[in-house]
Image (cartoon, rainbow, N blue to C red; front, top):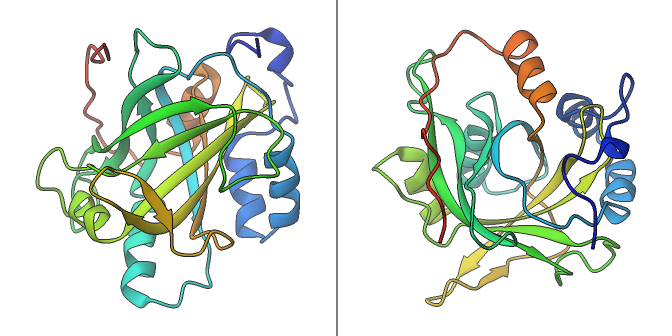
Length: 232
């Protein structure tokens, strides 16, 4: 059956993992530890729903300068997390990323963009060593409006796989991002399955969102989808 997101046993309390402590691990290139956490994640019984605080880190050995700059723009301080929509099917849904509307205006609002389809799967070939089920994020059709960031995702095509681990406030997700291509059916093929381009970390718990607002924010406004659309 797996764990529910509100299971109190998944809250580790003070000293537990947060998106920011995981981000610090990635910045310090502690990838073996991150992989150990990823491969021994929690099996969840549904997709998460709602707003998620987030932090991300690019992998720094990307050879292509244009790709590296695009990933920096999408994983740096311009990115604040994700939004997962409620769904009638608890294992299939859609969502968007919380990204700054303009990369040229430092105080432009954070808006929901770069849409994705998401699904809870028992396993995935990109992460064969993962012992838990996994959440995939497919960006075959990312555009909502003519944002530069969404245009970049049509050219620099990416795919995410994430797992849940026990965290300070409850389940926190560790995500891996690959570069590759989507075919006409929206199926993704990684350019190099053994090479990530980024790690990211998201937490849907209110404690994480509160910490983000109080300790990891720069005063920017944020636009929300309210209410969140229901995925049939």
